[in-house]
Image (cartoon, rainbow, N blue to C red; front, side, top):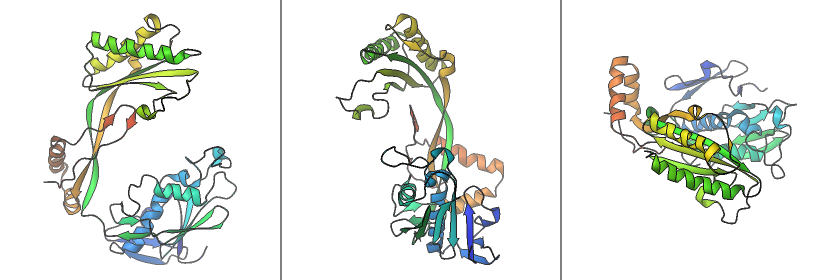
Length: 333
């Protein structure tokens, strides 16, 4: 390892290397100290960009990547965490432990670089806005990618935090069909359940009945001429305000196993299929005000949180999906 460089493995960073105030201390193999000012957008951008590549661990070394016949990965059961060898100028070589499975190549690095990045030219982090469009990648050896020219821009005036609150319950259950006519039986079962929900006066904000194996993922975008599956799992879910309403889902699905369509397969008792919803919504705060509050008493901090919740950020729990609808950005009062 060359002097004046640092070698970091995901999950093992020294606490001393984390940001402190307006600077970061980087310790190389020879204990040389590099003072990194918070306004050094070029190197902050490179550092945060490299951190983005590392944050999902084995995803950059072949995890969440394989597609047999198109993107094959050696020994995907033996993946290694990534290692990044960083130079003072922000350039780096990303690699992994030799003799392990997975792969570090241009494809794995590019996919992770763009993973969950809405705008590659403006990837917002608390300290800097990272620009990946200027970066250069080069394969310099087996499982070794050199990364240069990730750039940065001044940080945003606000910080985003996630706020959680309870927002009702989800009732969920599944049952199954197999063999010839499985789809026809599932379609009839859906009709039966829709009518039963009317009879029991189900009070739900949202109801979904999906056919796993046919349209549960792509929904309305599923091709009309999609081949009929040999097996189908019918997933029923509803979002309700009370546990009592959510329990109705399991009760009605239980009935399908004994009084519904012929040859219905059932799973666990419905009592195990009701859960509380914990919703989260993003909020924006002015960074300076947030810093001041971090030094205030716990009692003082209860007020801003209560007001934020009362302002009514958008609901984010969606049946079958873990997603959030962004709230309008607003400064704290």
